[in-house]
Image (tube, rainbow, N blue to C red):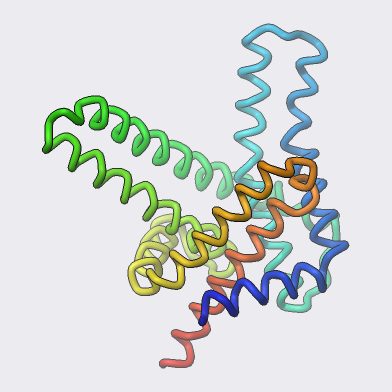
Length: 223
């Protein structure tokens, strides 16, 4: 029931702040695609690698700035495009560290799955490979809290990791149901890629923020 309420609230809030969120989504896509304009100068592999690296470096700060923007509009605070752009600079180091932590961890998990599944003729190796597959799902659920916590609460990196881990463990069912919903949104977005620049980043960020705020509110009520 709680998961349904979060999903329903995501659609309501997205419609309520449609213009602001679509605008932020368009700016986010523009910023992340801008480094690839270097390919107009040269199409060599080094320039392509540099473009990808710059885009990946900007991804974390853009996500956190968008999360911060969403958090402020949910709190009915005044915020504009300038605030979003300024937030990229403010959240730069925090965003870069968060994104590359996520990226490296995903790569390690995927490489482990590949390594053990290549040896799946051995029963033990197959079991370990399956275990890493579950770790991959758990780490994906972890993202739903980790990113909003870096904005909603003024805590450092290690505390955000610990709290996100505990929130997944303590609210596994609702988090997994939101995970299924997010997978459907991702599949829909890839089936209809022309709509991605208008809603993809902000809608998912809004869903994660509402989920985190809802769960944290539950804990406050219990105190």
